[in-house]
Length: 145
View (tube, rainbow, N blue to C red):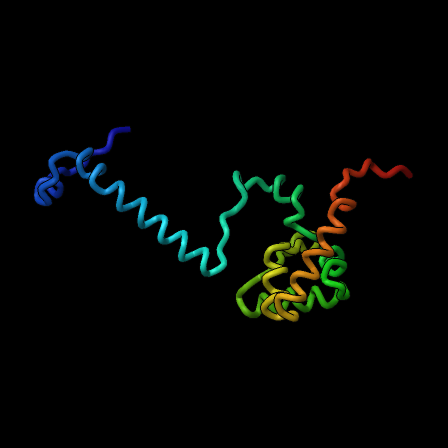
């Protein structure tokens, strides 16, 4: 499919050629991107894992059951469900409901830090996750009856 491009605006702006404009803007775009990424990092943003593959996220423990979340937070399953409801009321969901609740680990840790005891409690939960994850991540065979 061909697209028609009206070049009159380029002529009015004095652009010599489309390539000349791209070359002159390229360094500015790089600096702007770098400064925006630095600002986002200051706000706590981190880049998503490469590829953004859901299977990769599951293999890395990015998605937890409410029972797993309760274990790493050292609270009850009901407390996790209460936190899910509270986070939703704030417009900052930490889980999504499908057949069961799927809790996003990074979102859960951020919630703990902000609403569940601060950085100290977040670090404790992260350490518990690190201790449980090797066992949880082992492939389990089918159940026999």
